[in-house]
Length: 372
Image 1 (tube, one colour):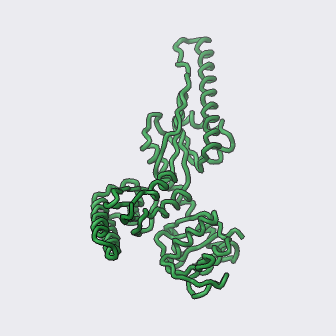
Image 2 (image 1 turned 90 degrees about the horizontal axis):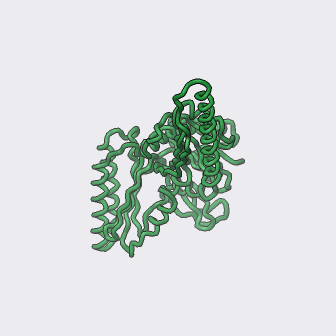
């Protein structure tokens, strides 16, 4: 899943046929029984069928088929590492697309002439890229993983001389020759990795391979790369992309939990001290309206009604007139979603938390760490 995929999906030619979009949290830690997920999917599909009542006969038939296919998909779902799914269907326009992500998503359905891709856009924008390098004394492979997908970027293969079986001075001299070749190989891989980092960029670096070789490789890395190293692991050079992705996701999960705890601790400390953090819808929305939010902290699944100014777009919890410009306020069915969109427009970070510390955000209130 990347921006190109989302753009092509958003531009799907429906020719006026309705497109059904369904998002479902399938996180096994939150919903260990698949039946719990099926029940929620059936409820969402009932909402789709209810929304179809305002359409003509052909559109109703198309939406009903969409809902049937979505329910069947969820009943047959093999979750694996998947924690969220997005389904897009239009029987009338020949569309069916399924997206699995290693992050939970908020349950929702939408019916429109275009697929509802905004939640996936948030994932692409906010989740981090993991680069994994498998390196040994002769070869190297480089992978880039992002939001549950992985691609192999390049392969580096150097001609390292084999071991010599003669003894004495000849063997020792030839062994030094081998080690020089190995050192040049590791240096070359490090240079290729640095160029890749400068060209494409990534947030975290995982080094994999035999322990001594990986340690030597890390020592020779540029400081720019060393500061991104998050794990040294063992993987065979022949490891499949799926195996590399699975290990990357394990490390990503650990880092995400650590990041969540640190964010909640900072949010609580700064808010309690009356410094650069606020908790609660009124204060957070006010900070967003003033473009002061550095990190928007949103509990997974949180939802609240609110108001939006028809003139300046400011968000509020209630009222009829905007306190910023005096414009008229209109209802917003989910002000949390609107707040996330506003934060992205302001280049703020989004931190979705699972409330590992329920006391940090009392009553599932959103929070914000402020720029000033």
